[in-house]
Length: 297
Image 1 (cartoon, one colour):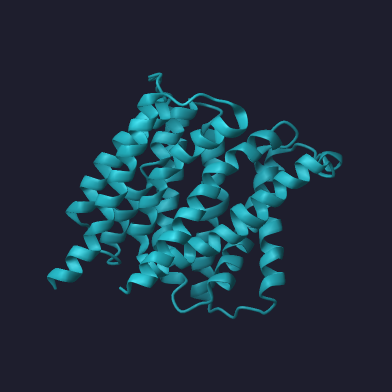
Image 2 (spheres, rainbow, N blue to C red):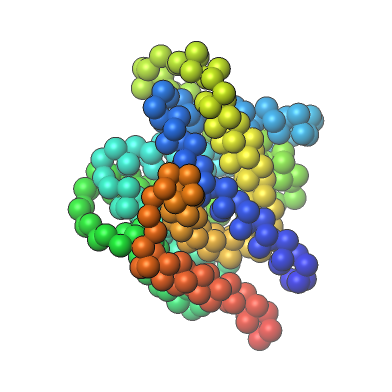
């Protein structure tokens, strides 16, 4: 792999994780007036139409490809977000953060059995180091362990959904324009999110949507968090590979507590800073696998 391509892929992944780690602030503010399913559907709609404006042409797919994108919409959009957000109503936020942060190792295992990328020892070591850092960051100086089977299983479902989405995206999006592939994924995310909104049965607060704060948060979630970042993440997959790109997810909890410190004045403990160092070391260790394998071949 060329150094420029690797650098570009790393920059795409880092930018995306910084944005995704910050989106919780917008979501938290919107939850005052909107339900989780309403937020999810609105951000997908904004992302979908923004990508139509960016690339206003149709994408012709076979039935098999369309089925693959339906699965992508389920695992990477509607079911992923719904299970993660619903898990927060049953179990501690720290439990959800830690369990969802295991998505990269699940992805590496899924990619191995799907024949996409061979599971490497460096991936396992990187996971162990980075995951230890994730636990320290999420606890942020206070250790609370309270298991809740329903909530924890929902969080585990979200992590598994992301692993399946990652492997499917590599195959389904191969040879396709990343913008068009992302747009079709979002289309099925919208279609499969609609029943969830109906099941919630809550009236949509249209008046609240017109306020500057709500509009700004939705634009950030839709245009940047979903539209732009899904495209960049798709490109990072193409440049770095599924496993290497997903390793950056370990950084997500630390980005979250940093943005919480900046915007919500929440404290950061020394243990969290130590966790950040371990996460960085784990990501670096995990990223070395493909390079070493290439040199040895």
